[in-house]
Image 1: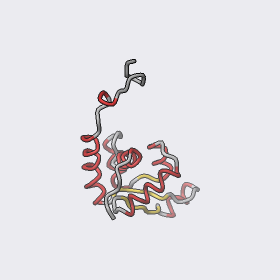
Image 2: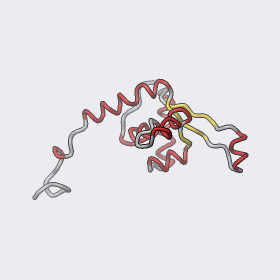
Image 3: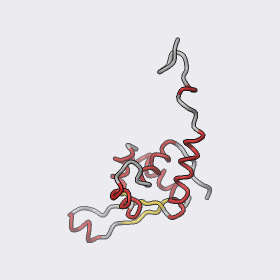
Image 4: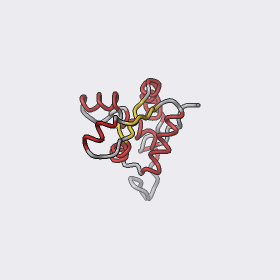
Length: 122
């Protein structure tokens, strides 16, 4: 399957799975263990109907893998098991480059200002 389209939502999810914006220890944990669905939804601000289809596309592209946490961890906390998502080796290698490419080709905000709109003049 081809690499995923770098929509703004895809970029947001990839940044979260790369541990961008969190401290070093938490980032290392995200990279090794991943994030569970509710955690990803909260971190990205994406609704489940947007987030999970996107994660499935990333999984089909080979960038993300999913797994269930161990039964004993969930039972010890008296809750259902969580499904975690983390970058595969392929995803961890390609995601930073894809994000950098999108950032490099994005037009600057100044060049997109239109008269009568935020930042523009009439």
